[in-house]
Amino acid sequence: MSDNFAEIESIVGYKFKDRGLLEVAMTHRSYIHECQIERVSYERLEFLGDAILEFVVSKELFKKYPEKSEGELTKLRASLVCEYTLSQIVKLLGLGEYIFLGQGENNSGGRNRSSILCDIFESILGAIYLDGGMNAATRYVKKHLLSDSDIVKESAFFDAKTSLQEYAQALGHRVTYKIIKETGPAHNKTYFAACFIDDKEYEHGDAGSKKLAEQIAAHKTLVTLGVS
Image (cartoon, rainbow, N blue to C red):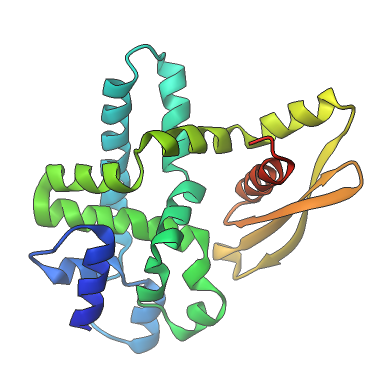
């Protein structure tokens, strides 16, 4: 298990003094319930990480874009800290395979579920803050989230449904969305949305809410069309 922690540290870019914090940050409650072990889940660390993320992103955007209004900064921040953005980062980093999951959650696709992956980004951030302080936490956020290219890209994602609607209307077409599937228990559903332009089906998106699933489908459709 120590080898796994070393691999996670290498991926994240931070070496923990207390690896117990990292262990907690990677533990889903399904693992605790199924294995009946004395360990806490990542939920408290995720709560802390969420607050730290909001502060760090707000501070960095405030410094980086002195010309932008409060509304523009709020919009940029929302695009950066949304479930889709954070889950995609964790997915690209390959951290999903290291999560301590119960077998049932694992079998139902938990390692790729956007809500869980988003939580992992924030729980790791909370763990880094407790282990190394605000400077270490800020470096983590800047390393994985706040490059110039990411800010432009994720802002485009935030506007995906609006952008696709405007693009289609200009060409005389109509955009609609359909929820084609729902999986998971009532308290933790995953929705699968399909994007249609007129009667032609384009891309799909899946997320923990219908709105976000549609947003992902719209963003993927823009990419497919070469608009974004």
